[in-house]
Every structure is written in structure tokens, then in C-alpha cells.
Image (tube, rainbow, N blue to C red; front, side, top):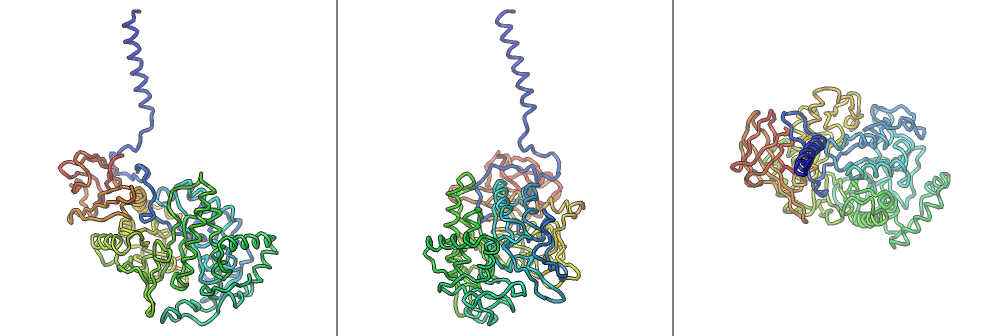
Length: 568
């Protein structure tokens, strides 16, 4: 065989091998040729996480998922309770399981807000027609310990690590305003620590802060700057548990390092920031903001951010990004009305200037009910880019204590998802919003109707599967694009309704075009020069690939929504 023939044969052989190799390579995000659910196929170039555009999942630890039935009955909490007023079995392990199952990833969640997991009062109180235990987590007995009904400290550490490995941040719910109620098993704390009267009347600053929220909920004297001794009940408890010396040594180290007074609020700040310093908790959701002096929140934020830096320094291999510790506040009644402050009547306080990055927006449900998409989106975008620059708000349609949610009967579940996930600001999905978990439970009293067990069995129903798919597509698109929650909004056309979102801050650039209330079948969507001529776009709702021609794209799908991003 001559040389020329060898060269030709070698060339042909190389082509055959190359073609075979290409056919065996996995295809990256192939465009769908039909209108099937494309949730799991959304793949975008990774953009830095931006808190202002986060998609947060809020869950009650006890009601979300039971991962370990062995801890369902702990600390003698066996009294019969009113319906949904006792511990139901949900725990930290259950949250871990759902992260590992990919549930949150498929829903586009990049932050999880968990209710407090510190040790709750052991006893119960009588409410309504029966007993109530501290299943919700807001009745602390010992801030230094994890409640055994929720799990263990090691499981909490595992939760944070696994969440981080999946690109999910953890927001820890914290309470500094009060202890748990007094019961036979849970004596009242010393007078130097708490007050048991008067009850708050909310007439002014004083009658909102230096008072008890409700009967039998001792109020921590957060205004005090006096050194106080540790409650004997805690000393006795820690001694019995074999950790007294360790706790006392850590307390001495904290106060020696910070030079803070050993006041009630500063002890609690030490205990809360330990979870940040040791585990890498990414942020707080702070309970009852307006019932505590603003100076206390400034100290908590400062110490939490120092603790977060310390954790990052000690765990460089686990650091996700350069974001500071995040602080979200529950300032009851706060709404996105253009004001940064809360008015007590005799005093105005700007809590954003006291360490808070975000406030829960109690106004969203009203705006979502009365405003059109454009009115809603443009209002929120304008406010966030004027009076709240550098800050944000968290929108929600339902929560654990709002008895007048946006869609209590779950009759507008698709609209709920679309408005919540596409409105500027941080979105808060309350567990089960995506599965239409019922918010009206017969036989319950008060807010128990909002706190039922997660309806996992609902996923078996085709109707619920389709609804979940809608939440997933919107959620993943939102997670992939910080421009949706944190970018500037601009309407492109009124009919069909098309708009853009553009984000360009600190070197992070992102843009999308979205269409709502579109015609089914073939539709033309204007692009408004957001993307240049000839750009290939992916509609992440239908999975269709389109090309920008004459500043427009033509999509043929059976959906009334389009989520357009540039092909990566």
C-alpha cells in the first residue's frame, strides 16, 4: 500500500471515530420540539447569587416532612392538643431528604427559611378548647440547644452543609423579643431578664416595645444595658446536661472579645450568633422587629456579620460567595409604600438603617389583588430603585400567621405563582403554595388552619402535577436570572403584554423578556432591542428555540406565557 493510500484511509478512519464520539457525547440543554414541561432542562450560565432577587422557600420545620419518626414524641409532650396544635413529626432530617431528592432545585429555590429550631418550652398551654405545644418554634426555653423534636445539632450542621452543596442558603428564624410561655415545666425567668406586664397597647413607641405581646409571654428586657446573672434555671439545666463549664467558658470568651455588657439582649445575641459562627448560617429572619429597641438589632446584625466572616475565614473551602450575612425583618404592617421608616405615632424608626437588608412586605397581597400586572410590576420596580436602593422587600401570598392570604380558597393558584415569582423584590413561597395545600382546615382554631402538614400526596394527582410544573418553570427561571427580582422593569408592549427586566450592578449583567396573557398557538413577541438581531433565544416555558428577526420573535406554543433568555 503506497503512502498516499495510507493517508486517505487514516483520514477516513478519523472521521468515522470522530462522528461516533460526537454521537455519544451528552447534549447540553437540547431545545424541546413540543410543549412538554421543560423545568429540569433549564440550563443557564451560572450568574452570581443576588439576595435582592432570591427565591425563598419558607417552611414550618414541624409540618414539612418527617424524616425521622423516632423523634416524634420527645420531652413528655403527650397531652392531647387541639387540632394541629401539637408536634406533628416534621424535622430537620425531613428537610435534608427533600434537598437531596432535588425538590428545591426543581422548584428554583436558592434560599430556605426555617422556623426556629432552638429548644422549646417542655410544657403546654391551654388555648381555645385544648392544649398547645411550641411546635412552631417561637416559644424558646433554651437558645443554646436544638429541640429534640426537630432533631440534633449535628443534623442542623448537615442541613446547612447539604444546602450549600446544592447552592441553597439557609435563613434561620430568630426570636429575641420574648421567652416561651410559663408552664409547670417551664418557670418564669428572673425579673432582671423579663417583664410579665403591662400588655402592649400600641399607642406609641413605649407601649409597643416595653410590654408583653400577649398574656403569659414574658417580654425580654432588651432595653436594659445592665449586667445580669444567668438565670439559675439555665445553670441547673446545663449542669444536668453535663455542659455547664463549656457554656460558661464560651460566654466569657464572647464578652471578653466583644466588650459588650452582659445584658439580657447580649446573652441572646451571643447564643444566636453561635449558629452563624459554627455552622455558616447565611442569614436571619428576625421576628417581631418593632417590639424591640432598634439598637438591639444593630448589635445583633453587627455581631452576626462578624460571626459570618469568622466562619468564612475558618472554612474557606465551604464559602459560596462574597455576600455579607443577610438580615430579613418581620415588621408587622410594613408595606412597600415608598417609606423606609415605621411610624409609631410619636417616633419614626428607619430599621433599614439599623442593620436590616429586607422587610417582609405585608402589602403585596393587596396590590396583587387590585393591580394589573403592569401596575404591580412598575410600582415595585420604581420603589426599589428610588427610596429602597440597596435594600429590598419580601413578597408573599400566604404565610403562617396571615389569616387573610391572597388566595385563601386556592382558586387562583396559577395567578398566585405568576404574580409572586415575577414581581420585583424577593419572593417567599410558603410551603405548599406550589401544591395548593389547603389553607382552610375544618376543626382548627386560629392560625392552626394555616399550618397543616405538607400535602405530599397531592403530587400524585394530575391537576397538582400541572400546577407544580408552573411553579417550577417560573421558579427556575427566576433563580437563573437575578434581573427578575432585582432588575429594572420596562413594559415593551401592552397587548400582548410583554416586558423586560435588566440588571447591571457590580459587574453582574442579566436581562430577560417575558410575555403574559399571550395567545395560544403562534404569536409574535417584540424584543425592544433587548437582544440584538439574529440572537437565538430559548423560551423556557415551552422549551422552544427562536431567533430574533426584525426585533421580534415568533413562538408557536400552546401556552399563554413566554420566558425568553439568550441561548448560552
